[in-house]
Length: 326
Image (tube, rainbow, N blue to C red; front, side, top):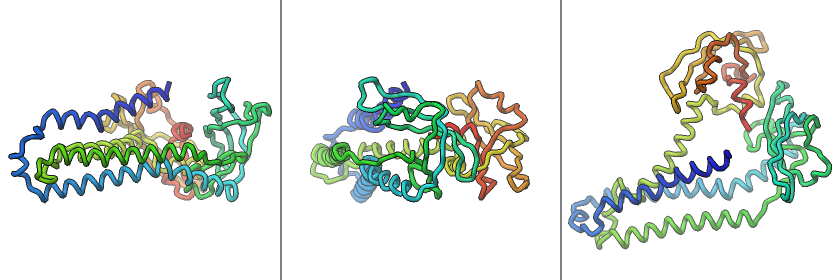
């Protein structure tokens, strides 16, 4: 269900990023109006052309890194973890089977309980592919060994000790072909736009509203909006670091007030907290969080569980939010 909703919103967003600007542009502008091209500043048009090329180059680099390079980076990081990772014993708290009965191997979503890098008990979700289901290694109550990145600088931050990293080169080739197809489509659109719109006047048809400018800007704005929404929702940028290197404590809720910001009609609440670290030093801090209307009773609680970074106690996060990190 979640995957279907994600695909829908991706396609919905893609429509407004690529086809929609094209539909608007070509329905409004007259491509045969050569007089309007003569009046346009050629240097401005060339500047816009350069900006559009830079935007597309940046996007292509982002896509290539995400689709192709990250495969090799993840394999390298897993191999590093297997050699240098901090070993921990984890108990399987829940195990949900995700694969179908006729699948080549069983896929599970596990909830693991273990001590983080400073000895605090945490819960962490993890996916696993079981190529030997007959051994029934991933049942509730059983224990597995995990490896954690001590520096918390590499993704994934932790793996099962039994993890084996292999690269499916057929998948890498398909992703590379997809990237090359995207590159060809963008290049082809530049050629099409020049041949159909230049009217012998070069690149003067380039404008701020041209799809070659608007499309990459919209795609980049999506990336910015996702990051902004993560901040507004209260999820800390260093949430994983706080979870794996943090200490859990109970904070006293001093005050909870609305900030005036709403996301989907859900208010953002500013929580003023007071807590004591493991050295018996008192701290005051605040956290912003988008609170579901059904969970507004948390603003009336006297105490809330939080994590603070042992090295820098002023960096905090709600324990409930950290439990959702997968």
